[in-house]
Image (cartoon, rainbow, N blue to C red; front, top):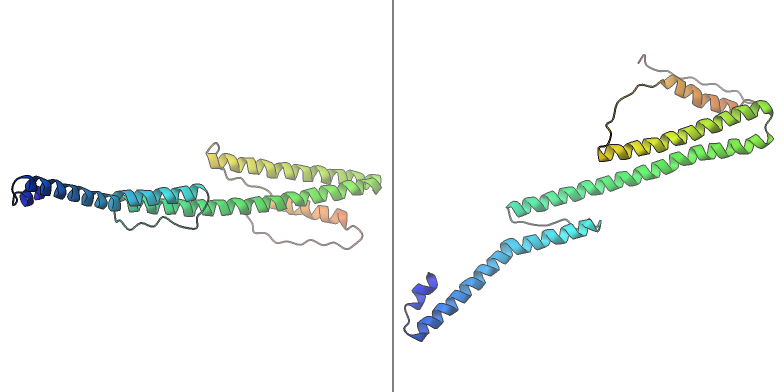
Amino acid sequence: MLAYIISSAFSGWISDFVFVFLLIMLILGWDMVLVRMVSSPIREISKAAQRMADLDFSQPCKLNTKDELQTLGDNLNTTATNLQHALAQRKELTDTLSHELKTPLGVIRAYAEGLKDAVPDKQIVYSQVIVEETEKMAGMINALLDLSSLEVGATTMKMEKFDFVELVETVAGREYVDTTSEPFRLSYSLPDE
């Protein structure tokens, strides 16, 4: 409409030329506005999503559009933060499990080597400790599998009571077997429940 009003001030082919020229300028100007308002933010969101897909969280999605695209970018940044946290927890879990599985393996190896030179009474005790440590490792592996099932929603967690005194006495009993020649004392204090 603006191009038509301005071009009507001229006559003949000049009017047509001015009309087409102004129309092209208005279309290009509107296109630049759309690129700035829509295409650039979408391109930024796409680049940020690609970086995050490659596990590169060094640059968040930066938008200042005050609209749905900025909300989408903010949600993408929140997802990236949560993913970073989850990856850090997974690494910590892997490190902890590696350490926790090494301990029973060390005990199993030590008791297996002790079986070679042990007297028959000790062989029975050592064999029992080896079986218990193997069961402990199997329990840890099952716990890891349960955790995996919880993550995918295949199972739900249920709280369960266990005998803490029995656990402490079992661990203390193993220490006592290894140190029978030295004085050994275990003391503990527990609440009623």
